Length: 186
Image 1 (tube, rainbow, N blue to C red):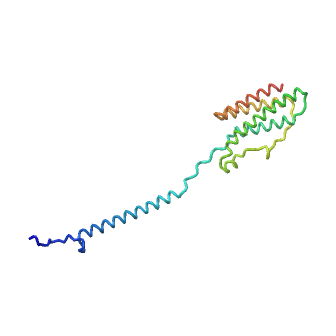
Image 2: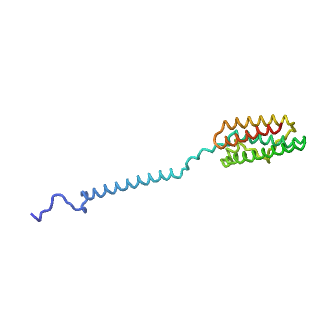
Image 3: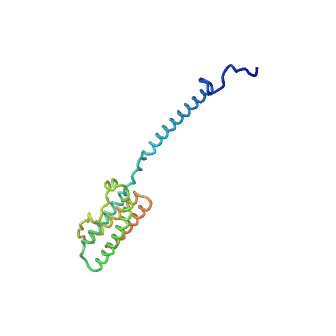
């Protein structure tokens, strides 16, 4: 019985044999897996080419800084317009003006930190510059200058209370200096 032929052929060459079925099933599974991988790659590639949403724009300069800079410009303009008085009064006015110019430079430097945001932010919250906006001063008496310095000290202190950190410290310093000016202009 060694020469007997088995009842079922095991040769892959015969049509419909189990080896051929496994080969075809394995090939179909491989093709389906590859197609799924290609589709997943296309979807992932599509997501990768979609730009991420832009980050939110940085906030504009605090209104307190903008208001303080405008107040400094107005005080400087009034001091420039006030030319009367003796040499001692003009000397005090000159020193007070120099202090206001220093305050303005410090405030403009703080405000400039915010100018690097998107153009949309700069349009919404413009930062006045000396080129396009120079207030006209009004000649003042010493009493009027003293009252203006007191108002400026109070306003700077209120702005400082609304801010925090370094901005509040700068405006508190400006408020203290304005109060000193009011005493100097007696």
